[in-house]
Length: 342
Image: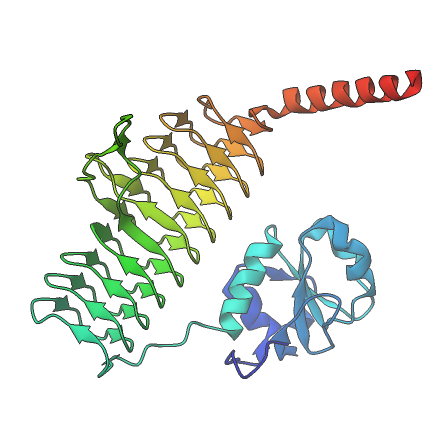
């Protein structure tokens, strides 16, 4: 159960209400009026809790669970313990996410501009916004309706932020335009200088970074991630991207729609990433590459060449995943042979 000091729970809700909310069905319609107090993991849930099963590796836990109800795929329903009500869904994890949102909705904003904030008189502020203590809104900035700006965040000169955004504390924004319903977690830095210079033995020469960062609507960027502005062309993050904590995106990079970029990854300058690409944790993309739409890049991969659309790669240097597994198997056999000879 979530700590009530930090999370405000709604409900209880009936299983009928939950099934309708998540687009699922009940294995037994007679369970429709059964009420669930909260959501909880399989191993800690009680009789008035709703849980879920998505990954088959947790089937043994599911079989022993005390949860009163569980969201589960039809193929696993027969493994349920006696007395557990079942909410049947083809996508249990998605259904659980919607159910958890029902119990723990985003708390509504209380519009206010804190007395400790500094707002330039030329800034344009939409209705119903929140500006926290110590925040600085510089000249010409635009903040859309229903957006919140966290404590000690800096919104730079002429920056544009869309509607219903959640900008966390200690965020720094410059040279950027941000769409609607974007979430920036604490410490995000957007629009700082790209890493551009002309090498010179007498002293490297700075190349002015004259582009912007454009972030599409419904993106989420995790804590302490950074997105450099372009050197001339813009750095662009497409709509619906989810970027984890501690990610670095270099200047002139273009990221398509719906991409997932996991923690500690880096994308070097001028690389173009297609739509719905997944980049695993600590993945690295060299500069001036093209990654096709739908490609998947495994964790800790080092990408040094273009990747075709739909390709899955692994390793450093990254190769198609079947090739990677063959190489790994060959190395293991060589190691075993060497050990036998010694």
